Image 1 (cartoon, one colour):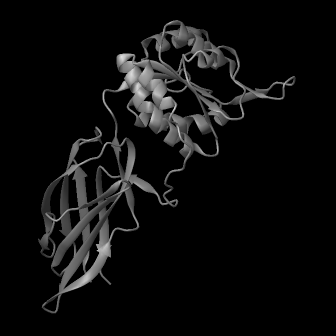
Image 2: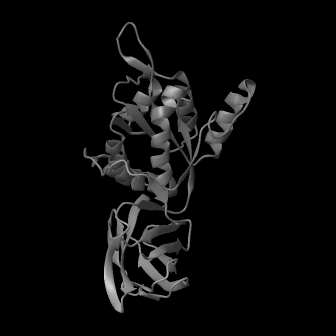
Image 3: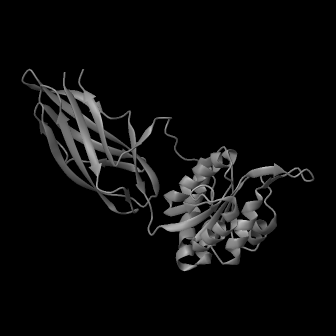
Length: 304
């Protein structure tokens, strides 16, 4: 019975959309029969690469470098899922026997971020119930080339330092994104209100002309300054369903290029044009299979 390990290594931790990735491959033959790797495919969520140059025979107990390949990546951002699928032949009784294709059951990822990185202050709740929603949204924001800062999460200070630190970090940031989650119900109106800190942090950013984006739980009545500046087209409000974050991911993919452009060039019209094109839709779900960082990875295999 043949036994082997196929390994690969991407040359960078993350890539800019449209950049080329250099990937190296090895095959270690752990058995007592010769092996031949004849086909290698990388199946990404955006498409596939048939890597015809990576192939060759590997003798028993040999760890062989199979070569490098340059992959031109598309203009997508975020965590890109892929599988490494390959075909192995084993030399048995003086014949090369096709023992099958491997790798279909394992998923990996690489990261693709636009450049340059911007620093964005995330105004959001730091209670457990708030972070249940806020953390996944913050991860989506990071995929668009942002370093996220929230006092109480990335930055810890004593209670008497909180206000000053918030002002400092908003001032140092390139923009502010508010995530309005429910905090309490207004007994007079019956509507959910968001945390008071969000209103104050939005006000600080608005006062010093920072680009603003407000993401609002659809069950929240925002009110106050955030609603006013949205009505005055100083910042858009994007509603989201806390039980369908994939829908928000799609909407953010439409508006984020314009938001980054607003930070860079202050071209407000392009930003608002993108906001007007927000669509409702869904995105792929990966069947509950564990996804592993694939920058450097390996797969073990064996013939029956």
